Length: 385
Image (tube, rainbow, N blue to C red):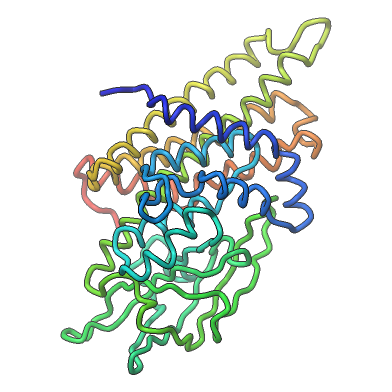
């Protein structure tokens, strides 16, 4: 097994890092506090091909894998300019459409995913169906050649900047009468589709929304792939989501550590940089170790997924997401503590970073549900719920 990334991947990381540094955390924070979006960064990243590195070459993409896209996500986060919608639009939605979409859907959407000229949100969570997707009640019913969707979604990212939402719903099986999963592409300007912002304490230009689907009429080709393969299609997008979430978290952890180290080197008390004290240095060193371990697990998960080993990738992606979320929280907490009182000042941005890091322990799947997964599927222990 090779633990060193290819020259091409390393060159991609450097180029993306350089792009992110030109924007940086001040740009990101300013956009967030003004209620704006990181549109300029998204458009430039798309124009340079970074948002479409995982899209097949025949549709204008880079022809790479989820590991390449995860590298882009991590480097932008590490520079203080994370693009949360990368976790959703090119990772989940483009992957599902590339693997299961019709020829028409691929021709229509993939080139625009490749150059970043389209953004697609992803709607799965409902008020009474979080981790338990079997309780989803958003339903699609046939009406002639059309589909009509009814339901509600909650905590859906970036809808105000999206052109469409890939909605996870359910449709009735004609033979059994039971509901089964189905995926629909819903334009955000479709009649009957509305959304409401959820007020959050987190400082981010990527906001969260509640969605309402009131008899949203869609053409027959809004259904992605086959009705009978929807569950497989759904999980094909969730493993990349976890890998990308892990990369997002490791990038945030690196950002926090970079700020802490720079401060510890220059902050002098009684003539000595505070970084010379082991009480400051050791927590930061430990945090660095844990971030690097999480990065390694994330790269393993991406390699397994790109090799087509979906089952093994599922286990590794969950472990990577867990490790990265924990590592980012630890790094942010130690960075804030290193700054002392300055850690609470908006000038240094550590408070916002700490809250962003904390999200990695909750979304897109909680650390507790990952522990349940590992206990049941890896260790073979009885299911507890």
